[in-house]
Amino acid sequence: MAFSADPTAQPYVVEDCRGVLQLLSDGLDPMRIEGYILLMPAFCSEQPTQSELDSPPTAFLTRETCDRYCRLFLPAGANKDHPLVNPFGPDSPSLETLDVGRVLVVAAEGDLLRDKNVEYAERLRAARGKENDGVELVVFTGEEHAFFGVKPMSAATGELVRVIRRFMATETEAAC
Image (cartoon, rainbow, N blue to C red):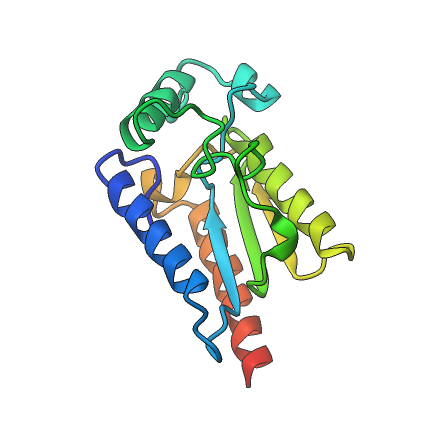
């Protein structure tokens, strides 16, 4: 799990993503990803969403900071429609071929990335062809980006741990 608000962690996250994509493209039969958890993923685009426009300048993750992170870890000359940060961009692969089991997407109501997180869950559901086919979206009311790192002992962080535990227990039971 990466703390996406930490700029020093971003190069490792990008390398991890590249490594996972390489593993998937190498065809590791019979290995299959049974599910994954996205904690407030750093999805954005050149076109700002309403949650970005509504984000206050006092937020933990501001538009300025998000833009800076994108410039730091995207390839030179790339913009926020690059596939690493925009899964719906013009050069991004289709979600229809994504076969990774169940998915838990966690978003925060006060996060400027919220709209893209919600959109990802909705579009992944639609791509799978069935309503709510293994895609779970949890939005934490009243919380900001990375609240679990900023307030690790809060009630919301405790609830996040329970949500993840439940998701993983369901995965474990399904695999047995």
